[in-house]
Amino acid sequence: MGGKMTRLDGEWLLTGAAGQIGGILRTGLRSVVQGLRLLDIKPLTADSSSERVYRLDLQDLTGLTEAMAGVQGVIHLAGIADEADFRDLTEVNIVGTYHVFEAARRANVGRVIFASSNHVTGFYPTGVPVGPDMAVRPDGFYGVSKAAGEAVARLYADKFGLEVACLRIGSCLPRPTEPRHRHTWLSPRDATAAFVAAMAAPDLRYTTFYAVSANELGWWDHEPGRALGYHPSESAECHPPGSTWEPATDSVQGGVLATPAYTLDRQRPIRAKFTRS
Image (cartoon, rainbow, N blue to C red; front, top):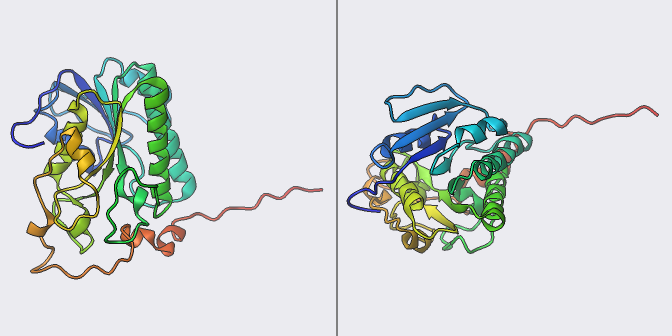
């Protein structure tokens, strides 16, 4: 979305409000919504009378349901945002996402915006155009957990009638810091615009789109986002990490996350269970 920012009625709840993107949206949405309910497992302080703070774990389904009472919608950012042990990702990113959607259903929330990830399709080769209608190809267990979250989101849209948008987030940083970001960068300004587009879209049932800036060498289809009203305004080409761009060396779009070591080094040993005969 460009130009004048949309103004929305009511309060919205933001999970993961203490995280990087949570901080971006907390600032960017102040002029968009009437109030924000900020939810995180980490301590937070309300900065104004339009903010309310909830310190909750995603495993607390009852607490999540109570925190959502009366909100217009939920933006679900909370979770593990990198490769990790598969069991931790299952508990936080998959079970936790189920709890968010189930709490939204119980609280009669109309719309949920789910922060997915570009790593859902990170094993596609670099240079191959990818859209949300293509098969998922996760580049690690983190990508698997986000693909599972998208499946949960789709179920709650189809079976229970929630309005759902899944945003496959690019590399959200103040500036690009590596060659891969020439293709994947998402500026903080464009991040806010992507979420506002999903929050404000009329006649939404279920959609998935890549939240990425207007990078000239981007890999991902912009059309699904445009159809929702998302029009990014910044490009990585204007912000090279150095005096010029170094050539990218990755063979697949997920970059280092797609390497075996990046996943295996983060798994805890599985202890065998022995039984006495």
